[in-house]
Image (tube, rainbow, N blue to C red; front, side):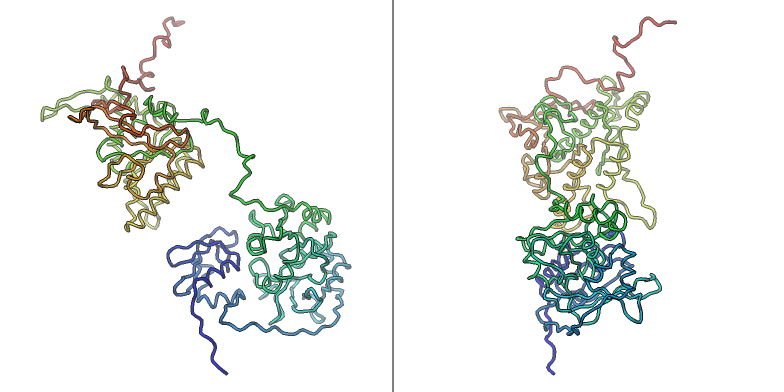
Length: 610
């Protein structure tokens, strides 16, 4: 005999295999990762994802789940799932004896206990082994009535004691059970198990078949594709497990587009797992109704536009920046938006961010701050100065003859009480306990939002949040993914996320493409603002650092922009209080803590009853 042909790995073979088994995949470098392992399916609850991968260069595969641990070469994987590669010879199946099968009484009695009548059992020729009546025998006939496969099922299977619950006669062709009972090509109902297809037949529904070996094996499709392709409509009546209908995804992906594929609605399972459970609990009418009410499955991430809630953009809940011309332009920062703040290094982006934090607190919002560059006490003092205002800041002369600005202890105490329970900051000094992993910043942000009801998240800045990524290419990808995650969090929880980002080196820092990192960062943002503290006079003379300007170069909600030096919002900077406010503002804003200390005259009680 000549030697067998040697297989050379082809990337397209790996992708074709993934499609054949209905796997959801994504490529990471040279690894094709499966969302769920084809062997263990992510565990009993399907919770473990992305544990299985195939190397596209070597062909090595492995599942990282300890309880699974399947590994080997791609050729072995194909063998396990009966997926034939081009280098292999076509499989030759056994020819089974063609003789009349009479249903055994033990098979009739067992299936009666499962709600299946004697008439249906005999029509489908289900029987039992003569010497072992506890072993059901399911004969598989093709559409011509030829017996091509036999499956056995142990009716008194004991987990942990018996080796197998179901098995096939060796080297027989896998096809659909019940093909010979079908007539016409209008509708075909496909179930996961033979007893389920018998249950559908019991309900009076014609053309009920079942896959031979459960939801994970689709080798039968190769031998039944032409026959299935003649039907106008397929109804998938798989098992309803963990909010998912088995068989549905793979059949939808692999059947011709000319066939209408429907699925039994979740609600029509009536809390049961499969067709036989429905039959035994609710009777044949419920099974028939489930088939008749089957619908074309909705794509989970697509919705009918008419079902989308109508929202008045002008009345959306917003957080104001406190700078009137900025708020007039952007109409405030709407809940669910990602706001990007950029500008030249050292020009005051962090100052403007903390000013917005002060404004949010004054609007009775809860805030969370990540400051990768400032110690927590440094950020707190800066924010407290802004909240206090110039009238409450104490001037002191230092040893160099210059002015220092500080706060009286009682002022700090009042401010603390005002925002206690409403302002939170990331603890950069937190030490991870041995054996634990530090959760990602987005994970922390989600927890803070859920547990502390935070409505404004401020991250200063993007680069310090990405310090663990080394490669520049990986860095840009990680930044894009990081910002995408923040955008999703903002939308999911209806909060505002404000992200500070530096411009690239050697850039002016005034346009979207100048921001450090991937261009997708600005694409994901809803609002992009730049802040520059130094402004040259109109004749191009000395730079004035007493104020600054804010440009609005992207505004997704309304489209109004102020992108040029001429249209930019002019602001004033107060060194004493670190506040940034409208250039034309005549008096400083009084925040809530101070009103608590000094109630307005109208609020004072002059005529006490004692």
